Amino acid sequence: MVTSAVVNTYPLSSYTFGTKEPKMEKDTSVADRLARMKVNYMKEGMRTSVEGILLVQEHNHPHILLLQIGNTFCKLPGGRLKPGENGILLYFFDSYGTMFCISNHVALFNSAEIEGLKRKLSSKLAANSTGLQPDWQIGECVAIWWRPNFETIMYPYCPPHITKPKECKKLFLVHLSEREYFAVPKNLKLLAVPLFELYDNRYGPVISTIPQQLSRFQFNMIHS
Image (tube, rainbow, N blue to C red):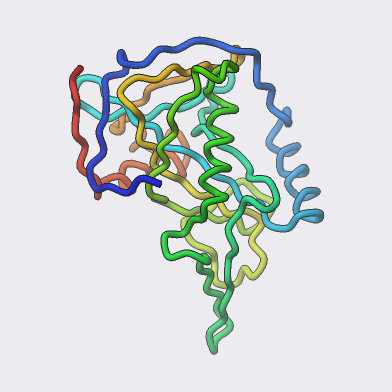
């Protein structure tokens, strides 16, 4: 776990990119994904997912690495944690019946979640060779999003009338080393998107609010 108010960002050209076997999506539509989420919820309870914010720099400006599926949909690398990898969430109710949810750790993470995120990042971006595994340095949890129902909409808070949220999504800053090798599945594209382009909401509310979440950090632009 790396905690620092300063984030070193290295040029995109410092990294090497290759390909690996396709990583097929489990669902062919949003409706299928929500239906599968409902089935899993009945078996395992609330879904916990983790995603990594990987930063590089181009033209002296931070860029975030996004995976593009098809021609329009982009997402952060990460995914659903296995049962047992998610943290313990404690729920409290005030005298008005309003639910409060806090993590079992002040930093809103646990070591199992960190290892789970590393596993998901390797699944998405690491080569099959053990000698080319990136050094995933997981930093701060910068945002937590909640899915109240089996719908696409998520909130950066759990609505007070929701006592059984369906998903908790945590976004972590990932501190990249100066040089790494990334293997991108052949059916996906890896894009470096500048912060100013994220801000116009074309990538959805979760990704579009990343610039605000990162505003408390100082970016150290390193030119190799």
